[in-house]
Image (tube, rainbow, N blue to C red):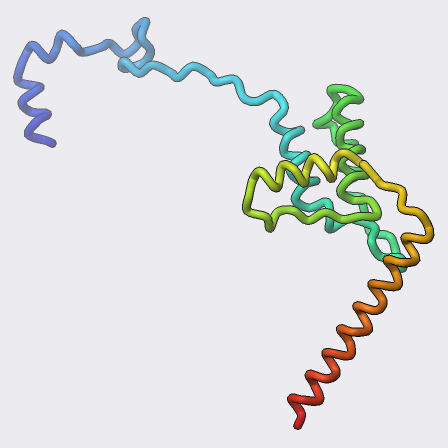
Amino acid sequence: MLKLLRIKAAHPSHLKNLRFYKSQNGYFGFQPKQKIEKNQHAKLQNAIDFFRRNGYKYANITPFSERDNSILNDLIDSEIFERGDEAKYLLQHLKSSYSGEIAFEIEHIESHIEKDWLYEVAESNYKDKIPAERQRRIFQVLMKSQAWTGMAYSQTLLLTMQ
């Protein structure tokens, strides 16, 4: 590399390509890159991604106590989103979708198509009204299933102890 520099310095033809310190082309011929306009909604997109990834951690799925949602409320009320009510409405909607009585944990799914579909379903807030009789039947089936699982577990323990 040093040899190449000596050869270039020895030839006067190389001097015609020399640029001056301050020129129309920048400093030492360096052209500063044009500023690329960043995504104007990057902070909002980060907040949406936060709700999608971590909303289940703040869901009220336990009947004994409510979770501390101060982080979510601070995120919604932060000065980042002073643009208007649209961003706050969107974040309130995401909070109710991902941190309500039903929790969605979707990040373990590898397929982006399935993830997008689940995001759409979770954020649509579609709640089907199940008749009371059907709810009772579902409850009975679940209790039988749980009883069977408990019986199978106890039988497995008895077999392993023998």
